[in-house]
Length: 617
Ligand SMILES: Nc1ncnc2c1ncn2[C@@H]1O[C@H](COP(=O)(O)OP(=O)(O)OP(=O)(O)O)[C@@H](O)[C@H]1O
Ligand SMILES: [Mg+2]
Image (cartoon, rainbow, N blue to C red; front, side):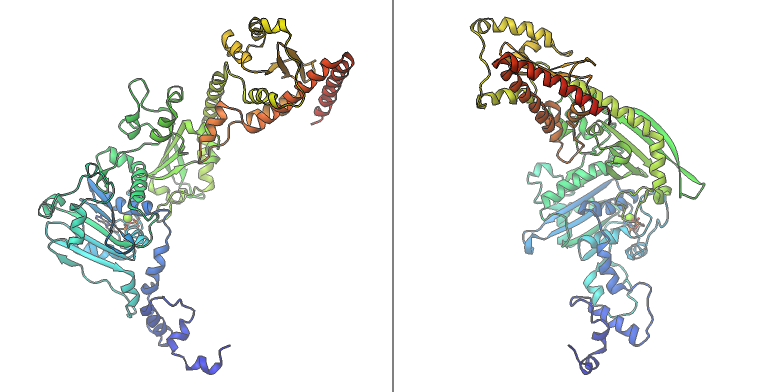
């Protein structure tokens, strides 16, 4: 316990900030103390501490923070933007410097200074472009590094710079922290110029890298008349520790986020590697996916619906703005015949990006929106694209760091109202196509349950009655006859024969309202179980269980393949329950006539009792 005298004896500064952490900004302590003890002027924004808190604005990912700089560069009219992740072996712990360069219009010194301030923007509140909050550049840079160095030029050899250094600001003891004037440089320091002239560690194959200039002498000319560089040295808060992973993630995401800008001519590089547009809707003729499709394949999805929808700016406001919803159907008939690797790794069909939303042409959301499209795996085969204007930011829930959307309830309703029926129709169509395809895949092959029951026979304690010699001799001919009677709608005679020949257990279906729920026969060494599709056993239990087969979209879309070519666990278990019953029944029935009668009576009575009970639910 502290005594009263001890508390009184302390320095006043320590008392006021006694709950501050030991590493809190020292300048901040002094200012806080002065404000409280000496009634000094209190600024609305307390720079020494606030700048540290702003580091945690919360970007989802290093890539999404860097998108703020790309946004700014694009808005400044850049035709070339380059992102660098420089893994520096010489620096301690392999620290990574991150930089974003563009050849846009640059900033005049006074603009540069104002733009460095939080809230400083030339686009404040403008809903037509990308930036509107005056925050992006600063919060994004500081979210990665404790220092932001900003360089901009509007004529060669006149590079102006500004720096935001969290620690330096934290040490500042003035009540009102002011930004200094920009510094003028005639050239970049080696630390910066080498970004443009050196090879990055990754990609390791230099053939993949296109540098701005091969040496310093060319640099001034190659950098162009105007431009901007945001430099974030020794980043301490990156999503990954390796340049390789950072580069790969940035390339993958930005290829999609800036697809329209790239398609209309923007050259975007990450570590000197050119980013190619990736279109999750597969509707762009020149996007990455087309590389993996030869002449025999359709190269684009098909636009099936295009609807303008008016959305209220706010729930209680009459004013509206228009969004454009488009639905594209992937060429499932053709693309589903492609090798799995092409579908997955090259076309990226199963990445779960069913819905893409673009705000003023820049993608702000890509993912699934189960409330609108459901979670079923059929959603992999179409895409919904929603274009909305900046005036609907409140309606779409766009936050200042532009990290996705949080649709207001009434917006979700309006979208559902506009396309809900179309989505249902599309889900049904694709489901039907898949069911037909699954049936085709199964043609000529026993089901998993049938195969497992056959395999298990070698391990059963009590053997089934073997074939008679006569049957054995004619087994092929007999099985051909049997196959014709058991042939499924989608099978040829030959496929049915193959299937029956390769399985000792067979499940068949029959529709008869006056028949028990199953029947068993044992012919030519085959145990044949017939399920009555008219009985409640089938409609209320068997069929629903077999439909669990296709699970919802998940990260690991491999389940989908298992489900479509083989049966799902519960279906197999249910088939085996029935096949073990069939086996037991046919074995016991052969032992004597009384057993046969008793078992048959049991089957009929059980079936009827079950039917009556099921009619109650
Ligand atoms: N690469 C650039 N080239 C030219 N001007 C730029 C560049 N980056 C930033 N600016 C200027 O700096 C200002 C501040 O940028 P910042 O990203 O902080 O805010 P913003 O883009 O206006 O709004 P938001 O917070 O929505 O991004 C911009 O308004 C723009 O005038
Ligand atoms: Mg911005």
